[in-house]
Amino acid sequence: MFRGLKPLLLIGAGALLAGCAAPSEPQVTFYSHGTSVEVAPAQYCEATGQTCAPPPEDPTGELRVPGREVLQISVPGEVASTPWQVAFIYRTAAGEEIGGKTAVFTPGDRHAYTLQLPPDGVALEHVEVQQFSALLTPGTEGGVDFVISGSWILDVRP
Image 1: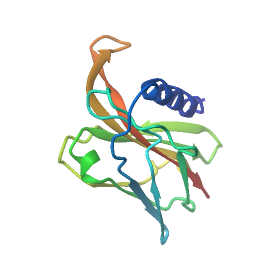
Image 2 (image 1 turned 180 degrees about the horizontal axis):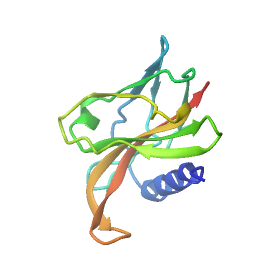
Image 3 (image 1 turned 180 degrees about the vertical axis):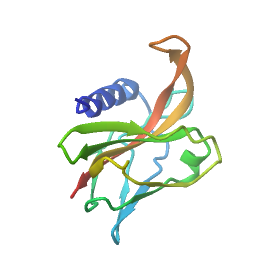
């Protein structure tokens, strides 16, 4: 049901990165159950989307998050100083795959977030930190949407 999120986000990342030069690339740290992993951005552009880093060969980090353990996420100042959010996919006891996301964190509000599964969740599967740019696009249901300028992807092992 929600599996299409990963390919769509990566396709969008490739479209944004075409023909771009490389800004510095901040790392996001994911931590759970005594282990951490630093993940390079799968997509990273400066605020106007004019200058982008080339995508890494393998843009996805991996980390073991057993059962209903929490996942701690730490973002650097380059991310915390902009609007950002966390999107995630988890599995229920019935085996249903469900997607969710946090509210958008305002610039300077926080450098870390602890992701805890909703009550119906039994296993976290996929997490993406999304940094928003200054660019706006027409929203699908009216209004406007912010363009994702940076994304850090984590696949979760049980």
